[in-house]
Length: 123
Image (tube, rainbow, N blue to C red; front, side, top):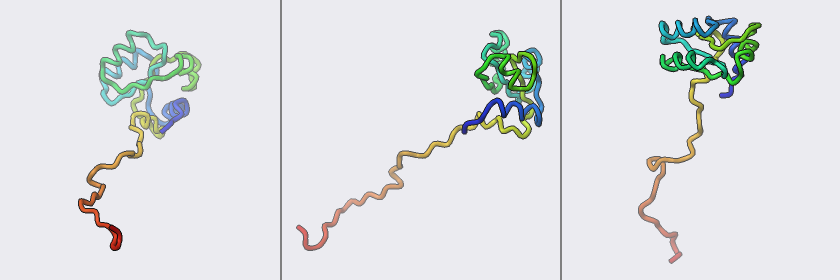
């Protein structure tokens, strides 16, 4: 499922509960295991390492901090954003595995005849 991350972030900010900033994000992941963190591409290494070490769900934002700020409707850089409640956004669909059609059949579904009969009159 392809999801527009910018639209999902804006909707999360409008309808959910988020914390903006790397310091509050680091504090939040220490205290809340249900949080999801959005990290900008240029997030400082020490912030990224601390958040990754906390085994928290992470969404890698493909743009820089200024792009993440603009996507969230804020006039400043955002290195990290913590989602405590996604609201109506559906942003957590990023973590759901995509459904793939099965291309192989199992032997249980195939019926194999052991004896092959020839039509009558043909030898």
